[in-house]
Length: 468
Image 1: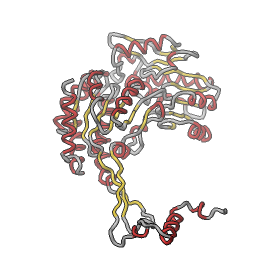
Image 2 (image 1 turned 30 degrees about the vertical axis):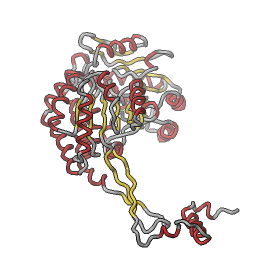
Image 3 (image 1 turned 135 degrees about the vertical axis):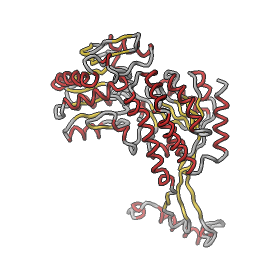
Image 4 (image 1 turned 180 degrees about the horizontal axis):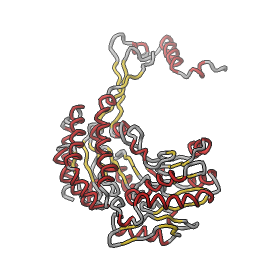
């Protein structure tokens, strides 16, 4: 823990030097981040394979390529996003000029998690650097190889801009005792409460990227074969360890039966007849999570899959038919288990969704316009996607974040720049003509009439013409 305070101090000193404010510096950091991901790609792929059994192609799609695209999008658009935005000035204040501008917050703490240990640390980093901040990064101790790779290479490619603090709970606790200007946390609800309590001590603003149970609803109007393949891809990517993965499927009995058959076909299409032999299928991160998933599966009804090997942390893609009260429906699964839950129709599905914490994402597989509208108007979620899971993360212009129990705040693209900036209000008023003389004390009847006229001019039009 001896590295915590010095890392925070170095980040503070570098920010206070003013070096991070120019646009040119920010663009260089984004280019250097992309360069690191290109030049050290083999090291990073090996680290992700060691931590999670990720195939190199999946690592490129969901981690390396994702962050590279995010940094490139920020670099391309940053100058236009940072331009001051003029604001109209009311007659009472004229002549004057008003505008807003995005200014850096200072030093940002980014606490990452283990399921996407590169993406969920470096995507916020890119946004914080684009906004002109310095960053202290806390990688997950549950992805030690990736953490070590980042600790080795980030100081070389981003000197002064980023500090990396490795370790576990003691180091995180020590970091939270330091003063930061923003804390960005990705993880679970219990840890989020700890972060919020610590942030409250310094009144530090916080962005929370959490999870929850993201549901999928499927009806008979959709193509079940295509829907099943997309659901299986979204659920079993990274061995199900994805915060926006479909957590359970809601459908009528008439739809669930053929959908289950199509899901089995989709799993075999994606990972072969034995997913244990597939290089494209990942592994569970550690023994604790493996045992947790085993208990969830054993506490429910397995209708497909369920095979597992504790020694290699392999857990097969598994379909469940849970009974009321099964634990698997009480918590975020975060693994390769997919419960199939019967409902009478969309109304019951919406009631079930609204009876739980607001999800990070909601997926509706339906070609019926009324059904789509019912979910859009009748539910609240961080994201709402039709006919595809998880792909909204690939759209750089869309904000990514939760609502309620699934998170607070959003990022990606311009939303990242705004998250890690303060939108400062600015006003410039010349000394001549000095219209403020009309409202300065001492007050008299003339000034009272002038102020009454000014008040009427800025009052809502409806109130001005309201009958008395």
